[in-house]
Length: 120
Image (tube, rainbow, N blue to C red; front, side, top):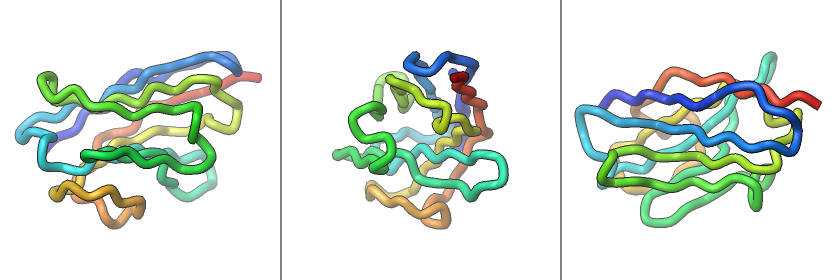
Protein backbone atom coordinates (compact mmCIF):
# COMPACT_ATOMS: atom_id res chain seq x y z
CA UNK A 1 0.00 0.00 0.00
CA UNK A 2 1.21 3.51 -0.80
CA UNK A 3 0.45 6.37 1.56
CA UNK A 4 0.33 10.06 0.70
CA UNK A 5 0.23 12.56 3.55
CA UNK A 6 -0.81 16.16 2.99
CA UNK A 7 -2.31 19.17 4.71
CA UNK A 8 0.61 20.53 6.67
CA UNK A 9 1.44 24.21 6.85
CA UNK A 10 2.15 27.22 9.02
CA UNK A 11 -0.44 28.21 11.61
CA UNK A 12 -0.52 30.44 14.67
CA UNK A 13 -0.87 28.99 18.13
CA UNK A 14 -4.48 28.19 18.86
CA UNK A 15 -5.23 27.52 15.22
CA UNK A 16 -6.26 24.36 13.42
CA UNK A 17 -5.05 22.15 10.59
CA UNK A 18 -6.37 18.95 9.06
CA UNK A 19 -3.93 16.40 7.77
CA UNK A 20 -4.92 13.76 5.23
CA UNK A 21 -3.43 10.34 4.57
CA UNK A 22 -4.63 8.85 1.29
CA UNK A 23 -3.97 5.21 0.53
CA UNK A 24 -3.61 3.54 -2.83
CA UNK A 25 -3.08 -0.07 -3.71
CA UNK A 26 -5.12 -1.51 -0.86
CA UNK A 27 -8.08 -0.38 1.20
CA UNK A 28 -7.74 0.82 4.76
CA UNK A 29 -10.64 -1.30 5.93
CA UNK A 30 -8.46 -4.07 7.34
CA UNK A 31 -5.50 -1.93 8.34
CA UNK A 32 -4.53 -0.09 11.46
CA UNK A 33 -3.50 3.49 10.61
CA UNK A 34 -1.46 5.76 12.76
CA UNK A 35 -0.07 9.27 12.80
CA UNK A 36 3.39 10.00 14.15
CA UNK A 37 5.46 13.14 14.35
CA UNK A 38 9.13 13.99 14.55
CA UNK A 39 10.53 17.29 15.72
CA UNK A 40 14.11 18.33 14.93
CA UNK A 41 16.57 16.45 17.09
CA UNK A 42 13.89 14.23 18.58
CA UNK A 43 12.71 10.69 18.01
CA UNK A 44 9.59 9.95 16.04
CA UNK A 45 6.65 9.74 18.43
CA UNK A 46 3.15 8.31 18.31
CA UNK A 47 0.26 10.76 17.97
CA UNK A 48 -2.93 8.83 17.19
CA UNK A 49 -4.20 5.60 15.67
CA UNK A 50 -7.43 4.19 14.33
CA UNK A 51 -8.90 0.81 13.48
CA UNK A 52 -12.39 0.20 14.81
CA UNK A 53 -11.41 2.31 17.80
CA UNK A 54 -9.22 5.35 18.22
CA UNK A 55 -6.29 5.95 20.53
CA UNK A 56 -4.32 9.10 21.29
CA UNK A 57 -1.10 10.15 22.91
CA UNK A 58 -1.73 12.04 26.13
CA UNK A 59 -0.12 15.14 24.68
CA UNK A 60 -2.81 15.51 22.01
CA UNK A 61 -5.85 14.00 23.70
CA UNK A 62 -8.79 16.39 23.58
CA UNK A 63 -7.19 18.51 20.85
CA UNK A 64 -6.62 16.10 17.96
CA UNK A 65 -9.16 13.80 16.33
CA UNK A 66 -8.34 10.91 14.01
CA UNK A 67 -11.02 9.71 11.62
CA UNK A 68 -11.43 7.56 8.53
CA UNK A 69 -13.41 7.97 5.31
CA UNK A 70 -13.58 4.46 3.89
CA UNK A 71 -15.17 5.62 0.63
CA UNK A 72 -12.17 7.86 -0.03
CA UNK A 73 -9.67 5.44 1.51
CA UNK A 74 -8.34 8.34 3.54
CA UNK A 75 -7.52 8.88 7.19
CA UNK A 76 -7.61 12.38 8.65
CA UNK A 77 -6.01 14.04 11.64
CA UNK A 78 -7.92 17.12 12.73
CA UNK A 79 -5.64 19.22 14.90
CA UNK A 80 -7.20 21.99 17.01
CA UNK A 81 -5.78 24.30 19.66
CA UNK A 82 -2.34 23.88 18.18
CA UNK A 83 0.69 24.72 20.29
CA UNK A 84 4.26 25.58 19.26
CA UNK A 85 5.35 22.23 20.69
CA UNK A 86 3.19 20.51 18.06
CA UNK A 87 5.66 21.70 15.43
CA UNK A 88 7.07 18.65 13.65
CA UNK A 89 7.02 16.62 10.49
CA UNK A 90 3.91 14.46 10.64
CA UNK A 91 3.86 10.97 9.13
CA UNK A 92 1.06 8.51 8.54
CA UNK A 93 1.65 4.79 8.72
CA UNK A 94 -0.34 1.62 8.15
CA UNK A 95 -0.21 -1.78 9.76
CA UNK A 96 -1.47 -4.76 7.77
CA UNK A 97 -3.66 -5.91 10.65
CA UNK A 98 -6.56 -4.05 12.30
CA UNK A 99 -4.75 -3.38 15.58
CA UNK A 100 -4.12 -0.12 17.33
CA UNK A 101 -0.41 -0.02 18.06
CA UNK A 102 1.86 2.82 19.07
CA UNK A 103 5.38 1.67 18.22
CA UNK A 104 7.24 2.97 15.20
CA UNK A 105 8.52 -0.52 14.42
CA UNK A 106 5.04 -2.00 14.51
CA UNK A 107 3.91 -0.36 11.27
CA UNK A 108 4.51 -1.85 7.84
CA UNK A 109 4.02 1.11 5.51
CA UNK A 110 4.91 4.78 5.80
CA UNK A 111 4.01 7.87 3.87
CA UNK A 112 6.26 10.83 3.30
CA UNK A 113 6.03 13.49 5.96
CA UNK A 114 4.16 16.76 5.93
CA UNK A 115 5.53 19.73 7.84
CA UNK A 116 3.42 21.38 10.53
CA UNK A 117 4.76 24.62 12.00
CA UNK A 118 2.97 26.40 14.84
CA UNK A 119 4.12 29.92 15.57
CA UNK A 120 3.75 31.52 18.97
